Length: 153
Picture (cartoon, rainbow, N blue to C red):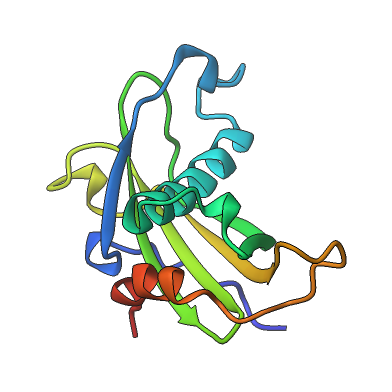
């Protein structure tokens, strides 16, 4: 078994950006961002981008993206009260699935915030929203157009 990739991505690894504020309640008893909050941020980065880039409620499309996998690699602590910048990139754009990478950055972009504090991997598989069995289906053109500019090699 090979060792996991521990390379910390930098800001150039991402194509779209948004900022999230932190709240007092985001920190755990140890004084750093609670693990569950990282997954909230990853989910928000992807779905907010899709909503804004398409201009529609993505939940009402004939094909919707359901989460098939999500994970997070942690590199450095984050926490309240500093904002978190979320970088978004697409690792793979397939026929019925998209693999996103979401970098979470906190701090001065020229200093401690130049490298990701964490990076999430988020997989959407598109399914038929009208069929109760939810079979996989091709990614809608509207979504493909919104995510194609995020593809990185």
